[in-house]
Length: 330
Image (cartoon, rainbow, N blue to C red; front, top):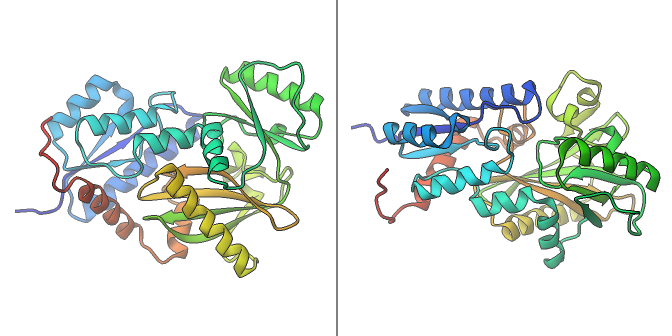
């Protein structure tokens, strides 16, 4: 009898920010399916965007032992990704990655930053706006504006870095009108940018994002359009020049963020370092993109962890979390 678990790959097929994002999500799911099939698993692919009822019915018919959760949302609703994780909890299907609470907190940038502040984890000063203010509170320019509850750099462009209040109010009004969602206004740390990849709560690598464009940010185009000026103007460096003290401080902060938000399996924490060497946590990313060429995959490569081993360990983690629990019944 085959002892390898039957796996459901859960993913998205609808627009979160353009066709390039959708293609990336589908390609990621397809690669995972092909990898697990080659490893001897029985694998099915399930798009959450067909609707909750049809999605659940399809899972009932397939009867998976475990789910590889690559979901980034539900249809065009980014927050749907933590709801899908919650649905898997209700269905008692073991799944990879963080649970709904960690996913929801990390998506809510102001809430996660409040937790960082409470835990004395350094993060840039910020304010949140749901409507236009008469003026901004005292903050140090330049500022950067981000959608408060979106990921994948949606809504982030060069125009989001502003050097005075007039420009900030103009861009704030544009974002509020276009997206009809709260906007985070944050002091922009105009320095070096780093990201720490974590696997099973342990730092894998410290990666620096080198910029050859202005402003020095990972915009939506830089993240998703490798052929764009922004994409070609950002380079990943896995042996950044920094002191051992700075490296240890950054990896220690990454682990503290992991623990503060209750993340599981794999995650990424983004940092900025100012000209004085002070380190600030920008945000946490549970269940980051693991498609071919992504920053997290490059971190796995730098840590000499194969994609096949990574997937196998994810599935094993999910199954271990349910050992000793009652048998589910779909």
